[in-house]
Image (cartoon, rainbow, N blue to C red; front, side, top):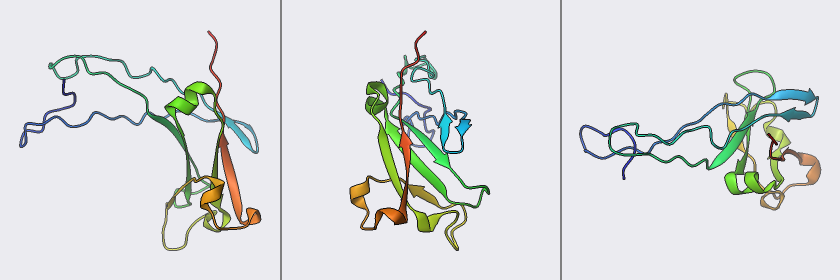
Length: 135
């Protein structure tokens, strides 16, 4: 079953994707909290061709120093890691903070420590840790 809106020129369905925002609550100068709902998107017959099924693939946070033109530091946790409570460390080069010259709004993607050929004092990390909310 193909989901997504049909492209009038090709007759094919586009892939259905959604980027759902979530709020971060500041707990301290170094810690934030958010609630992410894995079942936020509901299966439904959106285009009259049958039930479309949603699957969350990741949660991603983008943190910036202060201005919209500052670097966005993107840390991601994949759904299987999120569901099992795994902690993900994403490392970034300090030289891209708060901004990258000539690249306003640059997006820096976090990487595992071993992907950097730099000293620890040249890096910082964002840690994503999860826990299931009990009803």
